Amino acid sequence: MGALVVIVAVVAAAYFLAPGPASDLVVVVPSADGHVGAVVVERDGKRTVVDQAYVASRGDDTVKMSEADVGKLFAEVRSSIPARPAVFQLYFIAGSDELTEESKGELTRMLEELKRRSAPDILVIGHTDTVGGLTENDRLSLARAERVRESFVAQGIPVERIHAAGRGKREPVVPTADNVDEPRNRRVEINVR
Image 1 (tube, rainbow, N blue to C red):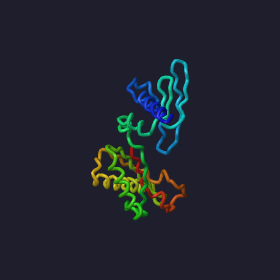
Image 2: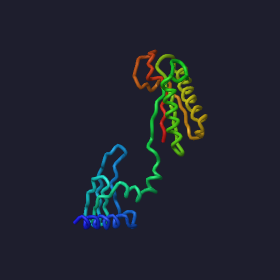
Image 3: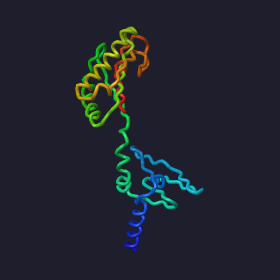
Image 4: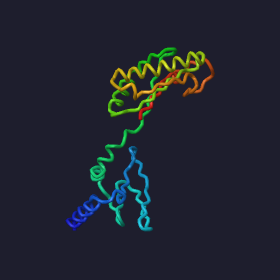
């Protein structure tokens, strides 16, 4: 009986891994956080719901595939998918474009992540707390963003891949009254795609 199960499994795997029209094979793959969605496959008026990880639908059949088989089958497609977007925040000393000690360490870790991406698009947005006037904070927030951009360029990231902007005190992460020294608002947000 055990040999028959192995033979059936090998034949089923061969059938599902055999070349065929790209639209003919549907496989549910979990997201990076492990969530499994569902797909409704309709062929010739017949509906099949595929809602389990690594279950494949081809023709009128469904079968559970191994993660390794799905990885091999779709290796080329998966390698062409860009890395997930990432968001980082760095914090600054009051009234300056100098990073806090903690953010200096975070910058080093962030640069390592950026170097793993083949062609990142980076948006660096500087912010301030509400101490000072609009013009002064606009200048300071842009100086912070440009300081981070310079750090990226110094590490070999092409300048044309990095866009810097300053928002001044217009978009606080912690809403405060005017002229409030709030360290969490003195930041640069880095969005990487």
